[in-house]
Image (cartoon, rainbow, N blue to C red):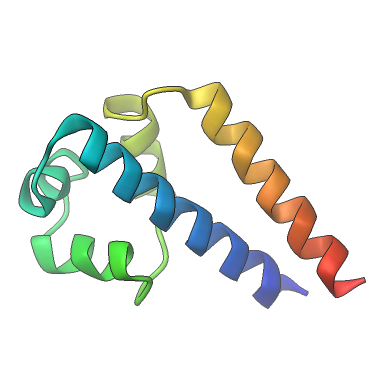
Length: 87
């Protein structure tokens, strides 16, 4: 069950990072700088090769997320959907 929730979290955050980066018209390197990570690590997040850490999530929410409430609502919906698919 945790694996499915982790995948839902990873995919949701990946899509939101990409949408935000495009909205702000930032390069991957610029987004990585905002999130205090290497360009390679950011690329791995955006491509789905790795999962967003708590620190990266906090930096995203505080520095570039356009609507924190909408982000949290969407994340909860994605997790709820993953739980329903498991049940």
